[in-house]
Image 1 (cartoon, rainbow over the protein chains, first blue to last red):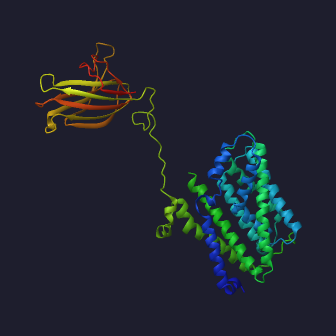
Image 2 (image 1 turned 90 degrees about the vertical axis):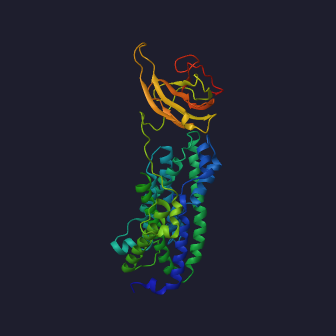
Length: 241
Length: 211
């Protein structure tokens, strides 16, 4: 009774674990873990002077759509949400959180340590997956307010977004319209990925095995979150010296 | 409050197991893969075994450059960089010796390279004295001489950081019975001594000058 997953899922569970491990290792390639803006995108931001509405919109969407740290959190958030209204409320809560600190960070010139912020973002993935498993209620007997947690982690994710933009020293000319476009782009990118993810999850939920696989998946989300957190703490303690 | 989140119930022991497994799995990935591939740390040897450690690239150890002073690593000069080629002919007679020096301020750097042609069979018959000499200040008082090298041979390459302001260069002497030519290449921060003045009494002119 204590180890039903290991018992029942030896075959499929192992295959699933292998897939997740492969995915995790793919993400480990160089800068991918830090999820920085790089190459020609970075050069564009650094060189832009004056408003560039559509390019920044695109960059925001691209940054979010390729930002698995943010995506893991968002997918974790909607994992067990069934009603459209709930999904809209939770995702909007997250968006309010990260938009606030993205704009506050870049426009208000608030600087935070990018490694520590990214470590907390990793922790947020662990938190949401643990919460999905009913971890707090089962272990501690209390259920912390998930919406509040999502708002709080949203604020942290926004600082994470802000540090990536700040690293590129964007020009003060046109900064406000550019950052607003970037922010709108982030929401668009998030919405696009969310639609795709929800389509898959809704289809997956019809499967009989969903509830058992969902447990494994959230355990793997926790694993991914821990790896991200450990990597960022490693960067903070070892690489910033 | 969380009614809308329909998570399947998970038992306490399974939850603990899953969380522990997640943390253990993540830490294993971190120690086995991330540490060698990203941080130059390979506590298990797994990185070396699999070649993952190559991903981290060469490890960089940052050293502080020696500060300004006699041992400074980087030297900046207000003066103009120059380079000159000088040929000094030494006949095998009583005019077989002369001095050729350049003016340098304290800390100026001179890169030099010279070879002697004419009597390659007898390197021991070409004698040189590489030294520096301060300007008498005030005039009439003693000047300081510092010896850098006194030897025989047909070539020399090196760099001089002037220990004091003055003229720095070579006394050269052809002891063979053939005429020889010293081909001297200079570059760095110095000034040529005009022909006839102290340090260039023989009136040597560069054959090529590039500012």
